[in-house]
Image 1 (spheres, one colour):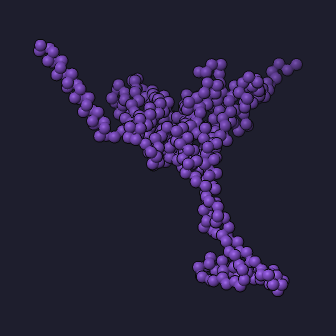
Image 2: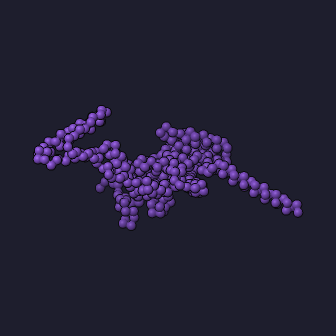
Length: 385
């Protein structure tokens, strides 16, 4: 009997979820991240320019931010960090990181990032990650979860430093920790739209590269009918040479004897009107993004009052997105303050969203000032009496 025998390492265990759990998972407490789904969303943005432009508008209109602290020295040092921190791909500043983070969150439904710390108790960089490389292990409660990755052996293991990771879902559902992409409802409509544009391209290609039907009709005499095949071959050869000469830029006439009928193939067919179906599809796509059509260069019929209401709705959408990513900014800034020994509070202050006409805003401010003046004068006159 060996008292001091060497213990063998326990083999990795793989446990399947029960039937009541997520149907697409093979490992207990894991919900798979659909990498194919994210590739589909990227392809939609590449194929439909108006969707790509809408997401870029949302990212740009979200605007910049400033972080204010109770300690002014800490605020100045933190502002320098926010402006100069490397974020990868030759870019610096948390606003550049936020643009990448928002792009991933809106397109893929989630965004992941990492705070890279060095040995000098400082943040060396803040980087965005690929959402397809990250999975989530759910705990016993919704508040308990870990970000995991696939190791070299193919096992899904949690990342070592969870406190340095950033994760934000976009409109998460109750039964899944992953968010919902803004493009989730678009693949069907985008497929129809691409089919319409593909057919338009084919029709215009045919219009620019015309096909001809040359029909030779023999006469009633026996000699003409006997030599019909030979004459048809001669007509075909001469017509082909005339078409080839036209491609090279030279002009060559086609002369035929007898009853020869030349028609353009498909000339009698009419191209379907695509304006109505394309507009209906674009209306659905743009309605999902929440961007007013006039911001995307679409000259649809709208009134001035309607445009103002659309701008107000867009402002509320942008404020909701800001509330979603504010905790990420606070976590990065708070970690930097703690690393540098600043015990102070911080507040993220976003830039004002300005989608309204400045003249109308000035008129509104004037009306408010006149109202306050009237109230003040009436209150003073009542005091005199």
